[in-house]
Length: 594
Image (cartoon, rainbow, N blue to C red; front, side):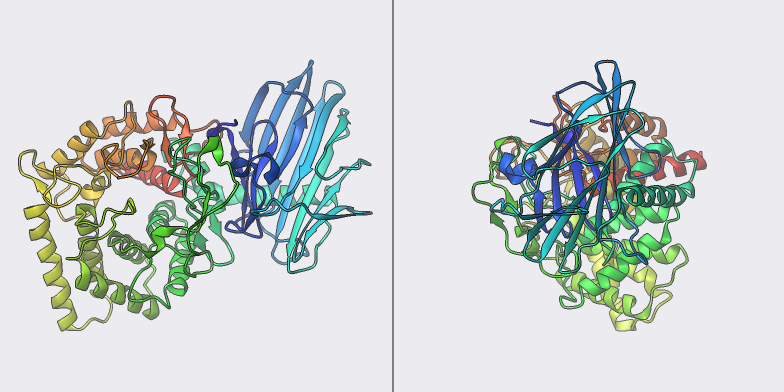
């Protein structure tokens, strides 16, 4: 079983492929992130399809990296004194050219002598692992499933047989290029292999140019840039929707039931991404998010749904895929997400914060955006006293979450600040101001552990919640107040998972069977909290320890096993990478102030 952290992500901002160090693409959905997989072996088993290109026998990997500041992966193997290198890429920019929306390019080169390699192209569509109707043409092989078609072109005279491994011999100076194009309800465009390599080079130049403007003062800039590129790859470019992860049902507990579909857009996660992009001066990415949110929420306002599909619709009902064995026998494999119908109060705070930060960056909200923000704030003012499902989406845990109340306060506070430069009636302002003040009184009365003087997970409890690490950044308390410091220290101590890692809440307290790993975004939130409260040296050390836990390609899942340090959960996780960027920004700003 290939480790989750062994995979690298290829992407074109419409869908993404996960490729292992042996050259196997074991996950790719078409025509977009939330489509049916054509290569689904990752959670669907051997019959769900794969696309492997690499050495014919298992040999050690001697080098694997992203080409600097790009989305291209290079993998090298030593084969009996010779070197075999695989270069993998997808082309993101296809506008203005006759190119398929999905173009995957795989190029094998040999150095030091002839090398035996293998090509295994075995696409199977969807839940039933449907084999394609296959035809062979002059340009290559074409696989069809009704309105979906993919083609595979090859630069040499090699007949790749669909569904069976094809042996090839690579010679120095004669690379083998494979080009897979996909089309959904549109003509299938053939791309010459050599031309496809040129398109990849042009795409790499665009990525490099995009990354060149990112602040050189950021600590560990290379890994921060990798996270920013990952966030861009996880943004569905036709709508601007940021997907939480490109996968479904990678387990938080291998062999267990904690397997969820993350191929949707959460406004909360997206808002955190806005702050990350704005912090490095990437204004357009932040503006695209708000434009998407206005479109997506148009039918649900003033309610803010927990999550949307990539085109702004309600997510499909959650269901289980029959006969799918799951990753490491982790069942069930799910599609859809049942959290879509929950009431989560904290999401409003994240969205209002994103709007406020964007305006602070000099981009005044349009009148329609302000109307949407007013409607969201009215909902908070009306509903903040109700229990909710909370940030962690525990299916049976509707209660008064302290983090949710803090974020409700944030929504009201940022809306009132925005109202200083936008139209707002006096009556509305008074209602918002009263609600903001009432939240402070109630949270301090019922959300504080009087004995420890720290904020807790829910009213009248003693449990802690790592989400409360956001506290020093809100303004509801002074960042260096005793309550803030004691809350941060209590979380760091009581929710420690060893080393730099944290649990999001006490293990075993969520009502689900089995255990889960340490929640990686929380550890980066701790870095940020320490930096903001003046513990800069501790924050820097913790940040470096967390960076040391990245995969060899600089990626992170949602969770990490505290014992084995294996990455768990859907992968790569946008929230983790956004939290990493925010932690780096907090360190940069704290160092600058010092």
